[in-house]
Image (cartoon, rainbow, N blue to C red):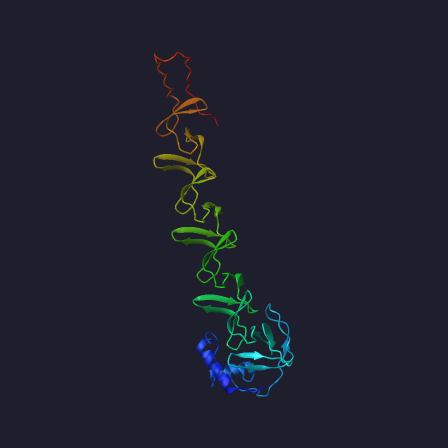
Length: 347
């Protein structure tokens, strides 16, 4: 094949204008970029730019692609270049179009017009990063301050990917995710370097817990004998909250509390299971009564038709009997019910 000096110079200008050498390995060689590109494609220079063989040889062509596209079988050599770019023609004179070709062990992609592709290349739903000489590039790549990863077959990674036992997540556009992400019904937190976060996370004055698989925790968590509760948005509960219509109490560190607690001049008692007590409670040889909201009662109360008197401390006083109602002389006479001072149930 004849090497066209004008075409090579054109390619050099095209490469310089497009900046496609960014991120590529450039050797300290005594040749221009356009000379290196042409020699790399034509196979007449080694990695250091040394001339290896100017004679045209027949490249090895295989039909098994490195990625998913189906290649076109080419039976002979045929690199050529025009003002648009590089093309490859088989011995039958057919120019390779819309196909992957493996030539001398290297994969190239030719578009619908038959030109070898370079740079960021979209093929159907798949994205590749092709070097200035058309070779598939793999590994990490940064573009517009976003990170991408190209797998061994050249495909841009999307979704979950495990690299060296570290999980990463790549958005639908291929960019590496950081911060909160939702996958299905589950939430995850990706560290600033893209790695999956697990364990305790303090963020924006709130605490979260990410399970060993990275899923954001909701509901109950028991750790080192201490119970914690995480709301539906993942934030750790503190203070008094209601879960399944029962009140629970947590300190500022999120640990569930038990025993007596006062809030806004109201007293509560939290049992060993963390729930606010409801009904009669005997503790320290005293009886107390808590309403359905868990609030300790004071004064006169009626339980199951019986009256009880509770002191200001909430303790039941058996020595106080209910007052006798004063009859209304203008009222219609009705039988006066008997009021009996009751005692709390025996437990």
